[in-house]
Length: 468
Image 1 (tube, one colour):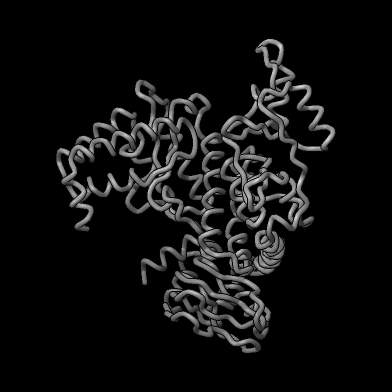
Image 2: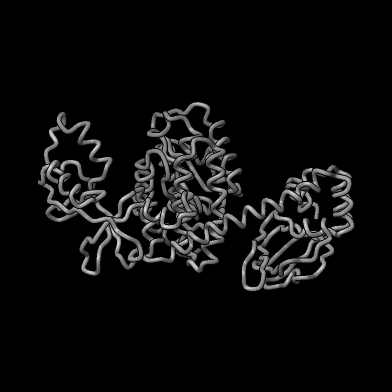
């Protein structure tokens, strides 16, 4: 129990207790286990203990309605105990539960003698109310995600040939009231948006821009009108685009949806998390945005959104979070000289809640970053605050093994292959499951290419992976 108690001491509100008060808990509390679907507290019952969740999830329900979720490090029933109240809801174990059970007498004595400890539970009531309000907002987002694209009004599509003069294309766009121009090339499509038109205004004469094809962006991304709004949002978030052409069953473009259309489809969901992340100008603002992710997951799950779709959305949101964190923490001089990469489950895009931190830095050969240890420590501590637990295997940027130059990584790969070991095979697998989220992504592309090439030269290594 000593190890669990140490964890308890570092968690609010128990970190407000002194040694003698912690000792009182140690003498009277016990660790309990409950399997899935156990009814922990019946509605209308009087409970005689405070629960502290070590592992698992507890649901609070009023009939069929899910009121709240309690997870790791949450306390359960403290406010009711202080107010001598019966339970308003039924509390059931949603994921097998390991918890402390602190007797009512011990809890009451601690609350009476320690005002900071008591006030935490009073404040928690207000916090829970705010959380429920947030869930209500995200429930509207859930309705948005289950709607189809053909349920919203599309902007008309202006489609012109690539050799159309810019001014003529703009006149057609103005006449149709379009928000962008679709460019028809010989064997592909392109798109011209407001940003491209600004380029024409600023550089049209100096760069001899004559036709609309000279300022188009390719490739163009499209989506079928039968798709869910959720998938449209996912694609726009992933590709960082604001205009998405919509096609019919024949593959013909029938209109354009804008990101603002999806965001404003529900008036009470004025800002999506990804937009908050992009706008964040401090670690505090970034933390405030990412703290909404668990609430969003819970609300979307309650709306029946499939886990694989939620996972994709969370992965894209987290990628934006890492990209923003990279720019907030590391010097601007690093941005084209280094690549921030995610590894393991994060690299594979297999995320729903907070997976362990698995990340690394690749530096351009010849680039020597200053104060590397202090910046990487700041980066990891920021992820601590976001809620990503540290990797037990220390696969993180604070480990010198995972912040090196491109050439040093290549030498490491050579060592893994020339001196095979289980640790080397594990590191190869970790590196292969990687994705670049910020900085110079070409560094990772070259590194993974080198890894594949070297393994291809020693195909006997594949047998070691197959054996495992």
